[in-house]
Structure formats: structure tokens, C-alpha cells
Length: 233
Ligand SMILES: [Fe+2]
Ligand SMILES: [Fe+2]
Image 1 (cartoon, rainbow, N blue to C red):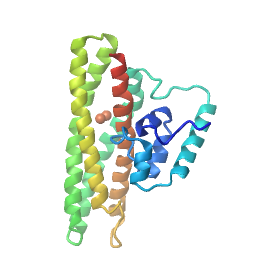
Image 2: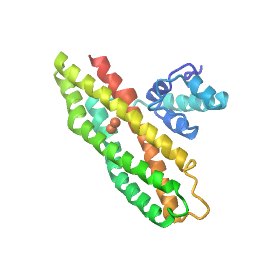
Image 3: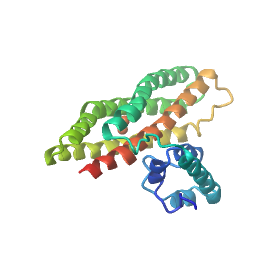
Image 4: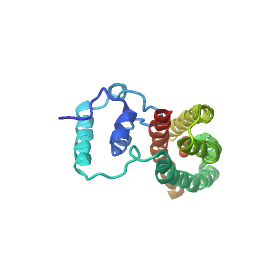
């Protein structure tokens, strides 16, 4: 019997089946900030092949159920989820952001005269860099310690503190998602122009890597960590 249905929420599907994230990326279905939508809505809006997607999801689900029990983000405790699953995404983001930022500056210098869109792309990259740098600090220094503290010593006061921060963090996830969408648009889906050099290609490749990683990263926070906190309350 099929386990994944089109009337399920996209974020819930990835929570149940982590590999669904790979399938959704292939079809550019937003599962982190758009995780609250039904799969059927995304299929309809993006004019995708419903059967093809459901077959792949259910095949992956079948394979997943054949495997012996192992820890997944959903079965982990809050502390395990943060330390083992989310923090590696933070390290990756901190490593790749300065690289992308420097590359965007380089291609602007070399190709900006013929490709005016590179000025906008450069600005978007810089904005994303600043936004994410501050965002990671907020999570690592304030939100994550507060959630871990609540896991150990739950109190109404601590719960309110966490709640307020989550609201702000979720808004920042949406903002980062919007910046990435705009980058996708301005780069014409990351298509390197005919006269683009290998640095041009590398820049777009790196932004795509960051986009893909951020999808997984935000999904873990929006769809797994925050609901886990809410269930504890
Ligand atoms: Fe994060
Ligand atoms: Fe985040």
C-alpha cells in the first residue's frame, strides 16, 4: 500500500522520509519554507507529473522501511538533532559563504561591464552573507542554548523566551529563501552565459550548493526542531 499521498504536507513527507528531500530538490519543490503546503498544491502550481513523483516517493519509502532501525532527525532528541544534524550545516554555511562572496566580487570585476545583472547578483550575495552570518549567531548563541535548557528544565518562562525567538528565526528563514529565489531568477536558473569563464561557473555552482544545503538545513529547523519543541511544551 502506498504510504505517501498527494494530500500530505510537503514538510511532513520529508520528516517521515528524509530522502524525499532529494526528490523534491530535483523537481524544485520547496520543502523548507514551503513545507506547510500540500504536495498536491505544489504539483498543480508547478505543473508537474503527479504519478512520476508519487511513484518515486513511495519507492524510496519502501526502501526506507526495509532498513533496520537507525537514528533519524525525527527520532533524535532535541540536543542530538542540534548537535549531530543541524550544526554540520552551520559549519558548511560558514565555510562556503566567504568563498561565494569573494567569487561574486571577482566575476563582477571581470564581467560586470558586459553583464550588468552581476551588480544585482553581487548585492544579493552580500545581503545573504550578512543575513546568514547574523542568523547563525542568533541560533548558536541564543536559540539553541535556550531550547536545550528548556529540554533539561522546562518552565513557562523559558518556553516563552524560546517561542519569541522561534518567531524571529522563522521570519529570517523566509527572508533567506526569498533572497535565494531572487538569485535563481537573476542568474536565469544559474545558467552561465556563453562568454562566462570557469570562475563564473564556479560561482554559480557554489551558490547552488549553498541553496541545496540551506533547504535541508531550514527543513530540519522549521519542520523538525521547532515542532519537537512545541510537542515538549
Ligand atoms: Fe541553523
Ligand atoms: Fe536557521
